Length: 242
Image (tube, rainbow, N blue to C red):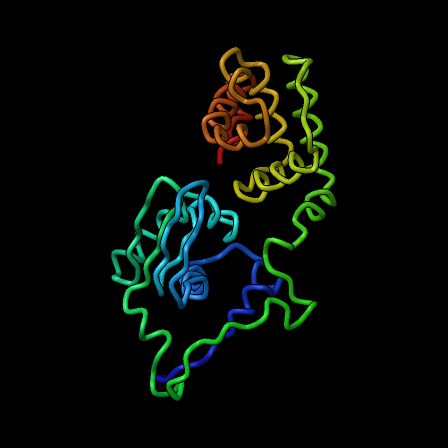
């Protein structure tokens, strides 16, 4: 089937658009929808970064959060798209610039009657909210497992550092929820990872928040598995194989 369809950029403001982790086709579509259609200037601190038509200024960390996937997935997908000749990826000290190859074919074609994109108001429909306004904090707060594990991590860390002060416990709940969703680890196993992180002489110095727990998750998980195998009978070890 040949031809074209028009997709409104407002599609990315619908909560349904972000309901599940992105796969490759939706990731490519998202890049196209995110691309600017006119020259813009992005300010990062004292630096000014010029964004040309057909380019997207989004860090891989930000895309990871937006797509609900790991940063490794984002890097792998961008590399694949680049090898297919769909995009070109450029990095600088402030962000990642994704340039869409053959940008004109996505915006000017005979079936569009020569019409270019038009800037639309941010709020044509008040029921549609941009992704930054989707209440992720509320979702994490409603997850009792994430909330309980965040409280457990905090109590364990304070055993080692009783002077620790945190400003926002909701952010801890959200980060623990991300760990559960991103890695697919059962809460009972994440609790064991937390216990290891705060009892190990090396890790307790480096894991001082949910974000650092997430950063070192794979190393901690492997070490937790090895430690668990040594503590259980041989005939039970298959239960802990993944």
